[in-house]
Length: 423
Ligand SMILES: NC(=O)c1ccc[n+]([C@@H]2O[C@H](COP(=O)([O-])OP(=O)(O)OC[C@H]3O[C@@H](n4cnc5c(N)ncnc54)[C@H](OP(=O)(O)O)[C@@H]3O)[C@@H](O)[C@H]2O)c1
Image (cartoon, rainbow, N blue to C red; front, side, top):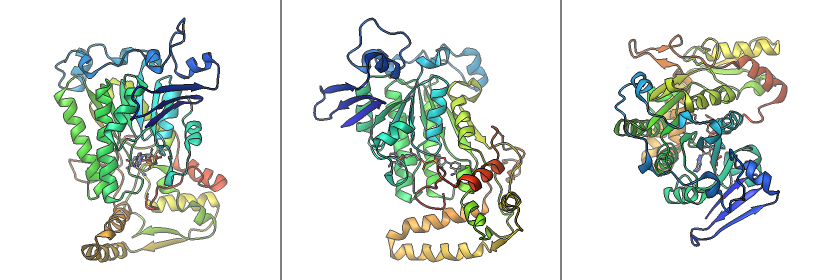
């Protein structure tokens, strides 16, 4: 069974009762129409959302193939596509809509006037803390469809019941734990389900939120992401009327804010080695969301892998700590931990996992911690094999310093880490 909402509008669909489609609206009819963002108000009210959106475009109705080999050639030869339409007539399906970045992507798409279909779980957020009402409030302006991206049949049925065609899929899905099985289930399988379902309902472009760290894949979630990226690229190679934009951001603010309140309370700022083992160009949720939404229409982002960081120079943990103490007006108080401690713990866990397979995720979390303690979230220059701050593109306005200042004033609300603290 799937439930689809647009604020006060609810459609109930039952797998067992395919014919059953009940619509409720606590508001007047004009409100109902507004919520579905029709371009012109029909003379008679439609009986179902399908009529509002018109018939589903099947993938068989794709535009004629064109022999574009590179993005620039595509620019010259591309036939008319959804990009020629007004945003209000472009249906964008967002999966992972309730995540840290996904929420901002939905907000930005709505702000720019797109018709947004947000797929969400009935209980969303970290550890499922949000009930439907909270999810609906969070995703205001979007048509929220409660479904299950981990089950292709359920997802397709929900979309079929919605009766909408899809122009673009935006995936902000990610495993909330980073555990081995969950990474494959979400970063690969569920994301692939959204590609298959999106394609079935007409999508000709897919925007993927990936991560810059997949350049050096040592972790399971990175391998899962890379496998999906490769299949996405293959899909665009096989069908020239389909395209993708793969966004690989550097560190998010939330990943760097974990120590702010501790340091405010007088604790030392903890770093590995000399605090210069790694660096990143952190990007805020609104800035990254704006970049992702640019990928929906920008022709220069078609069929491209796009590493992206925030504004300003790259920052090491040492520089981040210094910035924090400066904002607090306090003397520096650092705790420098040898990275070897992590290596030792990881080797112990790797040994134990052979005897107790249930420790698989614990061992993986250790490796994730080790990875981010030593690897930069910057572009890995293929010419030198080194991370390059200069070659990592910047986007947006928000700085880490402003973010730290805000957390010092208001706390980390809204910036909670995932289900594992290492995220
Ligand atoms: N943290 C960083 O610094 C950083 C840097 C670069 C790139 N990235 C990448 O950015 C991506 C998104 O990160 P984020 O922080 O926005 O992720 P997030 O807050 O953890 O959100 C994950 C999204 O996926 C959904 N999801 C997870 N498990 C699901 C399941 N079993 N069934 C249905 N939906 C499920 C969540 O839905 P619910 O709300 O229902 O759980 C949520 O919408 C990740 O791929 C990450 O690797 C992160």
